[in-house]
Image (cartoon, rainbow, N blue to C red; front, top):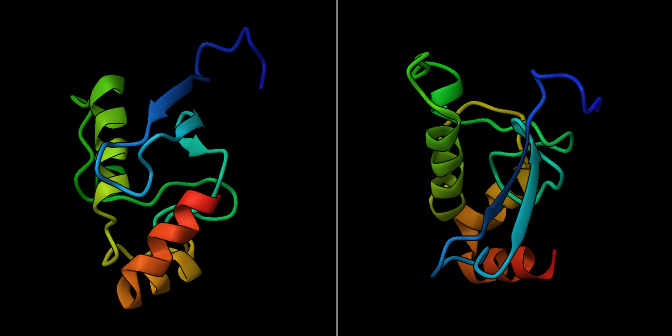
Length: 106
């Protein structure tokens, strides 16, 4: 990423309290995660969530988008059609304890 490109943003969000992401620090290149341990994030870090598709509005600020992404860590949008992390989605839906352990280990 070029540091002089005003269209590229880097962000850091903290894992939400009372979630398996708690205590984690997650780096994004707006808006891509640099890890893929979530049902709505594919291997390239692309984030699949409704606000990027049918709920998008130009009124969303960067702060609001980051808050929405942080909320996504608590409650994945498993019904969003995506090519996100299918293994993480399967674990989330079938065995929450294993999913939480998977997140904490990565």
